[in-house]
Figure 1 (cartoon, rainbow, N blue to C red):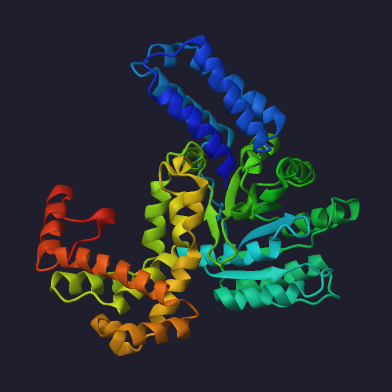
Figure 2: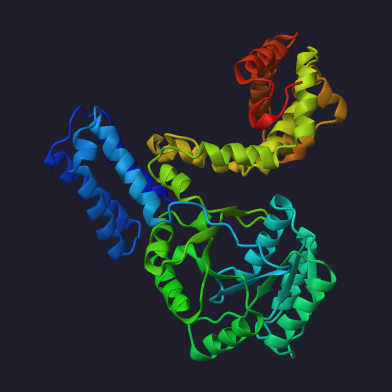
Length: 457
């Protein structure tokens, strides 16, 4: 997401960063680039006009003119205004109500509403430790109810059954009773979508909303529709008292216009964004972090949170202990590290959150893809347990056999072994108590606990 916008803006940012002082022409040229970049990213015209006007007002005022580093001050202004237009701060769900907290999901057909219900259920269960129930009031789309039931099993949450012949209001009321009996904290209500906004659809969802009085009403919209996403959200917000928006399919949207337009056009905050098709591919929307990513400043906070959530800390601790004791790093350990990286969204997912990515050429970016990780794991899986633990056994004939078994070439196997040797060398340098010494040093610098208050071993 935002690739084209980031590339365009990062060059402007680099030009400004080294300026000792800014002139009217500098600012005018920079704003022209910002305006073009936003329009190319399919940001709605009223948003582009408002954003550039606000940046201009602050840029020619005291804030930038009196700064010791005007170029950097202007970059901060751009970042602040991008953050403001997207909603300033993260807005999570209001679940502080008498349980169950009811969340009504609305949106057009094909926006990914049902999939989002499954992802949101998992997020609330895993991150907020809520007991979640889901129900489908979509009595029109074939297999919609079965799809939600499958997703509920996949993410291990409660599912309330319904059928195509039932009335949507009756289904929702029955689900509320079931949620109370099962002591569920949250009830997610999936609704029927249409291919376009129509009166019958609006009348039905209005009646459903009035009957169940949800604490949250979320509009689910496809980010890839660009400006249309903001316009559709506006039409829904005029018909329903929306409390927020969920942007889906952002991993397929290189422009990012919807994210910059929805909050401004509708006045409703973006609460979540869909970042992948996986069950855990839903994230809380942080406007300040997204603004940093747009300006190629990275998103290290999200990266740290992702590591905390997705890395298997027990396995990581075992590897650290092994290295501390000076035991040899082997191919089983390497496979473990590769799989941990896959769990965190792969190389591309990590790369997106690092500062300076906009300055990397497209050719280099294209070489960093997750197929390499999959191929490397497949090569290691084609080895015997003995070979993984004792890589020195891997002679020419064994390498040829492993290549055939993994559907790769001997050159791929050799490349993997070269990378393994580099990792092994790095690990051996940290062995023999050196890692423990480093940890003690970090502990002295940071106090009794490590990052997040976790003690070092």
